[in-house]
Length: 520
Image 1 (cartoon, helix red, strand yellow):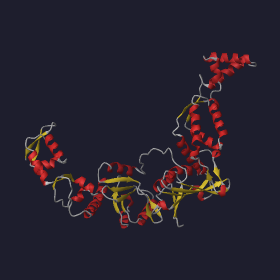
Image 2 (tube, rainbow, N blue to C red; image 1 turned 30 degrees about the vertical axis):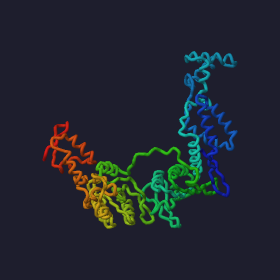
Image 3 (cartoon, rainbow, N blue to C red; image 1 turned 90 degrees about the vertical axis):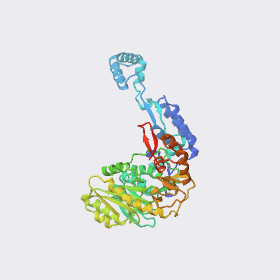
Image 4 (cartoon, rainbow, N blue to C red; image 1 turned 45 degrees about the vertical axis):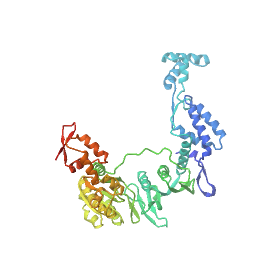
């Protein structure tokens, strides 16, 4: 963000239009960056003189000052003095009082005496006297994150943020509604959802609850205000609006309208993804956060199960009538386009429970699993809303969740198997079941009842009978296991134990060194 005095806007036509920097200003951005880099080791005053020269030659001095303000935050200024300036001044004033300074010679004598008392030269003492003044501080480093193009991107983002300082209301549409709602909550702002056709959804308090957009939030409008906006117009939350813009601008497609209090005149600021508003220095990906220890504990234990389900934290918003909810988790099946949502209802206020039950009642066309704290006593109510409910006390039992997932998995396996042809004829002489299943986009279990007439199933591998006959001639009793495995790999077989058993051999192990084939 920039300071208000560096704001560049046009009020043509009664609007409020930020004057963004274009790529034609790239040489100017490079000059400002080069001026900072070229003054490392020199006093701030010299740097400011050079920047003033740039301002005088530019079409808009505010643009130079804005670019400079961004780079100043990346710059390090230090006091360059042999001794602490305050200590130098104290010693100099004491010596001047003793000498009675009136003339230049008396001043020089006072500096010599002060220097001797501090064991420094008179010249070093004089340099240190006012070395801590801002204009005399030395630029020691410029750790800029940006090249000229990145600096222009940061300037345009900061300019747009500054234009939102006096906003009293934002109206936002975003292709990433989940990130938008999360940011609004994090900034503790109020919001409501409005349908594009004009129907207004109830308001939500970002300090709690899971209100968000309805079905297709990207096609609706999120209206954002500060809490005191309910009672009076205020500019108190402008900086929060500005911070929200960073999240909005990260979306692929977005638009924003803001009502701005421009010194008593209400104006409209309009921005979208078509404007040069980018986030050049996006924050690194943060660790996944959880709303409670119960959620964090469940996520940690579930990820260790190695099931055919991927755990997703806070998936997309779900429609609940005119509101939405963001479930705690979702389970994505690895072998099909199916998602099971998962909500953990802990012990909260009666209002919280009632709101959750209301949201669950209005959910449509989704599969929802709800873990319910036994103390709430609402499991039957949830089941009555056609959602699965499992009780828990203290921690959610992963075994219970895995059991529900297996039920869904059996149904999904049956459905995927039904879509397969009655028989499969792979070209390979030998192929693992998992590889064949992957080729058809199903799990290996879905192939259980599918005929593969040209192959014989041996363990988890499909092998042509002719290959088994060939292997029977190549492998014999007394062969080292390592040599037998090499023969099998030559035929594309990785499941050695099952095939060797099919050929009538077992392994007689010789410690950790290996084994030898013997007849069963």
